[in-house]
Length: 335
Figure 1 (cartoon, rainbow, N blue to C red):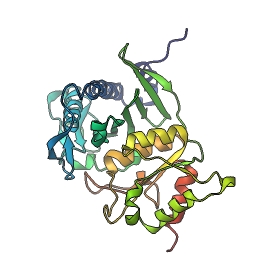
Figure 2 (cartoon, rainbow, N blue to C red):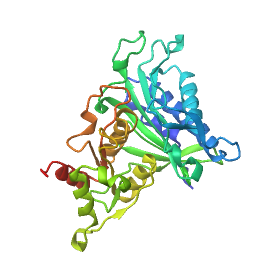
Figure 3 (cartoon, rainbow, N blue to C red):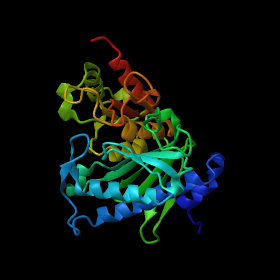
């Protein structure tokens, strides 16, 4: 019986794609894997441990933090700090970036941007949540403290990105620019095993994921796309199916496996969009493109946007190429 490849083995086998990394990237992904396993354990016992519910405080975006938001944030920061591979970290939960200036971090080449617990409002009702991460090479001189500019790079500069999804099974999905690969956690053994090599979006899908409760606030182009997706045209496989969980990782994961498109447009309630460019849009865009799909802000490739702020928001559309291009077409039509 053939044994499946573990995540650690896969990373080492593909280290040759990054000769400049000298093992740092391998170690960094290993740290993310470890932190993800710890967060997964806490999520699975959340009810018993009384760590569900709100933490009684807000994050930098003014959103109520769940207790597990705080716990996951602390776990990822402490686990990554224990390695000497990164010089700084920015989290969706923190107002400013964290500088790692201990001796072991002095020659580190990487920074990490992370959404420690995406979809945490779903924790109390046992709906799938996740962690999203993005890795860049620093642009400031090695040996000096990390700067804001290291975190405000366009998504095309990412060297790796991925997510962990904590659902009926726990998976880690990541890319280093050589395809998108998924690994399923075996709790009995305590390891992630390669289960979804070279994941691919179909060219076209039949699912659209959007919070239609905000329909009245959407741009006209998005309203037209939704009406188009709901039209009965059997020869074009319409109407589409509407599926929206409210957890980006969960919606994204389903759409990549089954074929669909995810939408979070701008609107009067979120004039610049709701999702964060650095913590959510860029890493998911990198994964999308490496899986043969398309990611856009409605008018162009979202990974080419240059961030101006650490917590900048942006409209976001990703998934099957045909439907993303249809969204762009509708948005670019004059009303």
